[in-house]
Image (cartoon, rainbow, N blue to C red; front, top):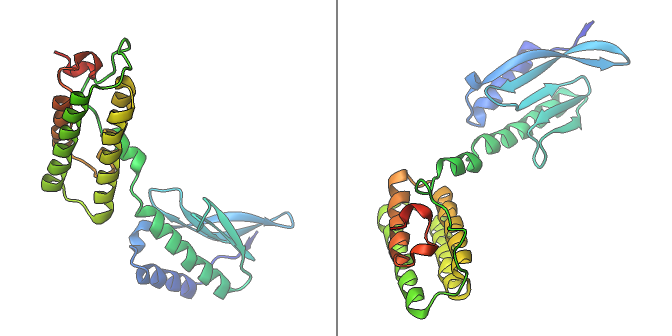
Length: 226
């Protein structure tokens, strides 16, 4: 069995490149794995990013890695050390981008509407009356004010807040009651994820919505029916 492992000097260059791109070498682990060339096994070097499925393999004449720039896995011809080194640099940039990504699906699981929140299956889908729309719009403005005063946001997050709440306000004028409640719950969940709201802030914001539609008991989420 042939051994095509990296030289100590090459592994040192890899170490230095990891530090250069501001990642921690302690988070990487070296392994050996087999590749087959003309049916004969060959030992090659593989480096893992601990705690993930991300890896880079230094094959004899190519490299394989995950993540790629636009795909989960990628491979390139790399017959020289220079080509392998350049490919590893590309992988590190892809890796850094992925490990710094927030897990929005995990955040979504953390965001909860009040316990028991649901829509009455017997609820009517008639349009809101004019005075009901005005009350809902006032409640939405209170949500905006609360977020502005109590939730730290950047410009992108502010745009999300305004766009989503403006959409919710417009929906109250054109959607039926039951449809609007569905829309409202969706908007509240979206804001919870986009702003990474704490349970305290999420509950406070939902209270404004509860008050805005109080008196429309049959159309409210089940937990706030009186």
